Length: 156
Image (cartoon, rainbow, N blue to C red; front, side, top):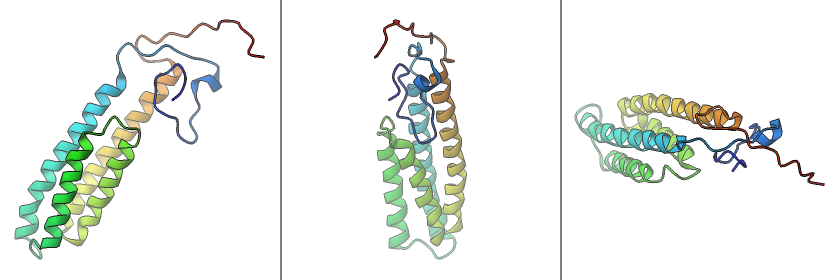
């Protein structure tokens, strides 16, 4: 966690606010709360779409086998379970991994991969938004953020 920002852990190549010389108060409203809600809602929507793909796989192509049925149902259940863990630091990586697994579903029917690609693009956009919010928070650009006054004490 970057001190003074309330943001999540920085990744490789990120510059904490202390490195650029400023610390800021936390924003008035928690920006991560809304993003967690969007991420959970997106997973629930994706769960519904994956279950709606079951009849397509059953009627078109090779039909629904026990393997393809179990694969899609387990993937859908992982999406529902994933919706409940969006507050964890690894949640976005989990969500992106689900998209990879969905795209791998092309072995059963191309429509499964199409769903994975569409939602994969949505998740990449969510990752972009998350990064943008984190960078704005580190720079003190969110509503209600103010610089923390330096106490003037020499750390040495």
